[in-house]
Image (cartoon, rainbow, N blue to C red; front, side):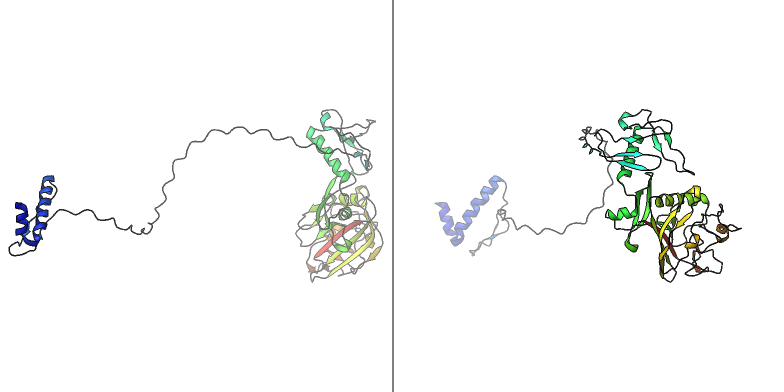
Length: 400
């Protein structure tokens, strides 16, 4: 009742003042709210509060936008290497390879020539007939039979035709390798012409097999005049010295990438297979091309001093400057086989089938066109006489 009267005495602000008083008392009881001071109550219905209780927390504000990414820090120092891990488990054995196909040809090697027998052989062996002087019979040789005293025959085509020589294989691998080579000889190409018939149309270096089963890498010209030519001499840039000895010409020299002489023994073996034709291609330093072609060409063996056996001149705008050399022996600076009182090879700085002395000298000095010296360049008398040395010379043969 007294509170109601006090509230009425305070006028319109009475009820508010009473509530604040109760709130102040409650806050003081809880020891969390400061005092409430009243100012200007005399003749005024306004209430001023100097300090009251803190209000309730407001609602959380909106989340701010993500700030820009900071700069990338510098790379730290490498860590200490870890210890090696344990060894992995051993792998399993791979699958066994497929069994090879059964051979169907027997290669029999004789002193005079190689013959291929077409009768079938057992599947367990490729048998080679090996017969040495004084043995009297042929022996089958199989790698799985090694070591047995059977011998491999090695042909020797020295002066006069030496007898076959025999030796024992040194390991099973050598015996197997010999069998593989003989098989390649039985089925491999013998000439560039044969390669052409088998579909090899690109000029380049190929392996062929000579009559004694010896593999020989040769340059095949598959483009000129129908292709199938075996090149045995090439001059093109003067990078190789052709003023060489008898032994050098016997064995051959030069580079597959440039100039070379295939070797007199190899040329003899190639021409001994049958009738071969010969072509000579020349080019001067102005880019003019000329050639000469001969019906047949053969080089005898060393016992006959590599004599030139040449057929008739057939055609060619270079003219004929080789017929005069037919039936003459090969000469080098250290082996004089010509008909001249002097050594033509030494005098004209080449190696050739000189008589006394020459109409051509394609193994002479590389003198790069016109030269004042006499007849010691790459000369072909019927084109350029004796004072012009050609840029390119190629001699090639083809089995007919």
